Image (cartoon, rainbow, N blue to C red; front, side):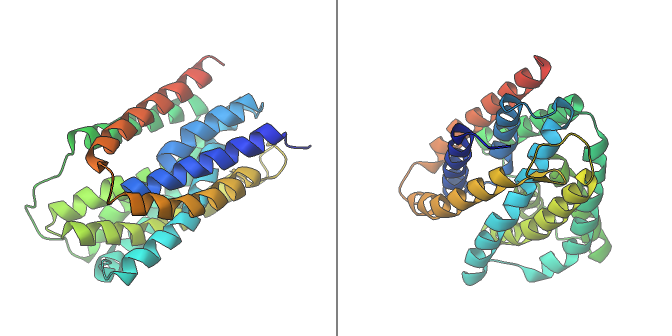
Length: 270
């Protein structure tokens, strides 16, 4: 099966959009990629029962590439608390991997509703600029592992790097915001690796998946979106210091809500 040029161009354009806003606002690409990929896959005629699963798997695989770049940048600035990463990593890996098994067995419509509700939560956080007041210290080893499992499980269900959960948690535990953001970037890598592996395994051998799909990962979208996002993310990062980011975050939050609503409409309309 040949892929029409318009779909290839659509994936390239999505990569430009994802990378730019990831660099500008420090957000993971999953919140954009999942609803957009779901809509594009539906237009291409992918099997309806696996639309969201393939979008989640492809997004999670894409986050592996972007999280490596982000991790290196934050580590270079000394902003990664590796003691926290070490504490949450076991729970992150277990929770994310297990979360893909749950997500892969949930029908498309309920999974889309869950994703949309979580996206609305993230959008409201951005609009209201919610920042929990520092009120306690980090938990012990078992506590960090438990938190990691929770963050990983939810991240696998919605294909995010975990920043919208881990940054508020760390700031609540009196971790400096710069370190919370940098550490979240490091946490995003094991989330993405475990999530991508889980969606690959869970989708392996699933009948009627499109050509060029490995497990629940659609390779043309993965390659093209990742290639463009890696080019535009540094541009967004440079502009972050020149543009009114607070205003842009509110606009971006509105875009997330619209994209999720569009995804739900596409699925519910059949």
